[in-house]
Length: 603
Image (tube, rainbow, N blue to C red):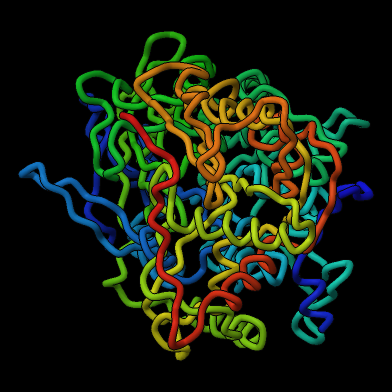
């Protein structure tokens, strides 16, 4: 079937619809004897108290909130905690009503306290925030007294111009103001984008750094996002931008801050690591400094100048507080607070007033669970109620029925299978010759849970829940590939930029293959095991493949998917999921969670 190619165009569902005290802690610390000086000390003089040499500065941090104002559903709203006897338990966590309470309690008694974030505060957000271009999350962060954050890759989902609006304020250029007579005021805190340059001016699109000051104490913050942001964001979102190397950028601005007399520096880096355990209180310094963590942040940490005293990181949604040696061989704290507001990190930086620097041997960090056993912050409850009321006419609409939780966990997940099947069904509507569908795992942001969130009843899937799963407004695209190209796509899951951390595509029914993780490189995909409806893939044959527009543009390192022919662009991916659920489920005959048995994984 011939089709006219359509250029990719970034869209938002908003336009379409609106036109119609601390938890249990894990400590990674550098401990050394310090002068008796913790806190602000000195001899009393008439009328005032002279500050002592050493001043403890409390740094509270979190990352990858992704607009999760309400407690996330399913496993996205839990953390795993290791117990003294070696067992583990899960703890319900997250929700800004609780995060606000925890942060406010943590600040009590700490005159010198600064709150920072490691990026992805917005983007891939649930309906309550995503429907309104993430204005609700910026409002919440203002109420949380966030002082500074780096940009993350998801801050570019709607492009640099929209990011600038979130920073500076003003109503949306298409959708206008959401509250009549009230203009969106923007973020009270600076977004830092030291390594994101305007291609024309060659200058950072936002501030590269910010300095926190109090009573002579000065701490500089440099913010960067991962250099590979163009590989994980739509082309439209990063148009006109250049992303520079994280280490080179941080080192450059650390020198600039030093020239300005700022010797205490924290880097906010939206790039992260992968600890050997998913438990938030895993000791990644055991048996040696940083031995229990891998991933991009390790090389970054080893090469960032010793002028930087601590690294607050993100992106991988992992939890860790561990030390990695800097280029001079000295240990330096590197932290991440998982994601979705489930944890926050409390770091003590001991500032030396004589040198203007951090006494690095005294830096200590601990991750704390944002438990839901503390009182809710009433101002956050009011904020959530306000935006939920505006979203309700759209969000409460039932779009399907399920008989149990449909999880997003696993190499192949039940929700991944469901989405791929929905896109295959929709693809066949567009073109009956469609053979299969592929879905990127990063585009699946949450599970579908059986328990009712509101008054809709157990097993009912609302539009808001579907939006939380697929918030990007990608289109479903059809393209032609040879069988050889199809096998190459599967190999790109575990090679190239995906070699160290495989991105396993979710696949539609009928496609099967073996993924042998005991092997290395492309050999991990057993080529002769790849079959469609029981028949081996013919390298020379042509297959019609449904993907989303992000993958069709070669995103996530799947360069071969950017080489398809016969492009046909359909409606957005959530519309495809909604149509599939409505066609295949009812209150009396709900859809069952898929078995997730299409990929045979050998470990």
